[in-house]
Image (cartoon, rainbow, N blue to C red; front, side, top):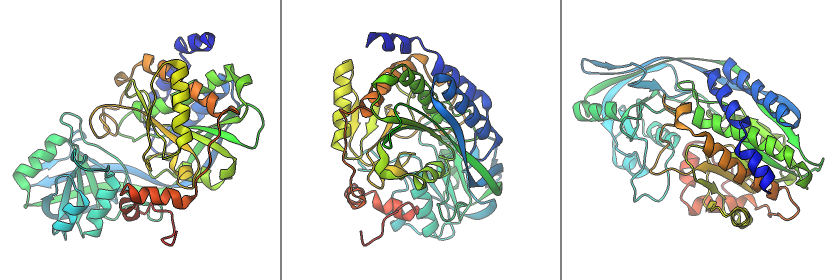
Length: 442
């Protein structure tokens, strides 16, 4: 065991690839930069020892930002560190009285008159609330309530304006203009202009575009496979080091590690680095549509790794996934935290929602929200090479365990996943955002 651990702890494979990804610059879904990053990842997987490294293209709704602003009184908030469009906002301008709805909880919308208003909400939830409310859920509550425009206010001071897409699978472009503003800008708007007329303007172009998933594999040629995944794309306002350059760098590092331990794999391992995650899990949905779920033994999805030193794993109620964490944690004398809730917000979900055992692994940080993620400050200097190496040791050993005959996990029925989402009060939000995939009769 010590040999592969030692090699991983001095390996530069993953970190070097992370630097290549952030140096690409703009990796927005459908952009030339996303394509360049996918090609770099394909080549890195092949160089790490994986076979059949290739790209799988698919069509997406393209979106490219122009300028955006919030005009209030005699002030215009428009510089890049004050106001940015949310991807897939329509290019439009809308005016109305500003309505500061605080956290933007479902009950806040029920109690307010949003018709024709410019609704502003925070990017977090209160400590007492029992579930996370995604940005898109807040946006579509505003849409359903008749709002004219949507302002998404970062809740963390000094962390710049947040981004994140709107739109649904059926209607990729949102219905009302939407922007993100920094905590300080939001506080000023709420103090000076709540109840006053403001205008939200977004310039954006939309067109047909192409994205791609990156594929490679290792291990025996079995029908059944373990999927080790990440996403290549990032929001265009930053270099996407944390979200999710680090996840894709981790997949490359794991390919190097598993190539070193290939004789221990009893099941094929497929590496898939998805495109177009940030605009609705489009690449993962494309892959899921082509996959026989019975042939997927488990999914190990890396989205948010390296952003903090300790790892946590959404296990989606699969007890075998929690047991596997205990097995590997005991072997390496390192705790791996299982989070047994459903986590429907990354590339594992198009598989897990139909009952495929799957992890979403991320670095567990304090507080709520994304921190530097989805802001201009998602840059390489926030991450540590040591964390990537240490986490690769843990995740590499977990991947070997998942691909061994020692591990088996029963698939669940989709209605069981749906029931778990209902029990966790997540179904309402998924319905309003168009993400509920189940027949109401199920």
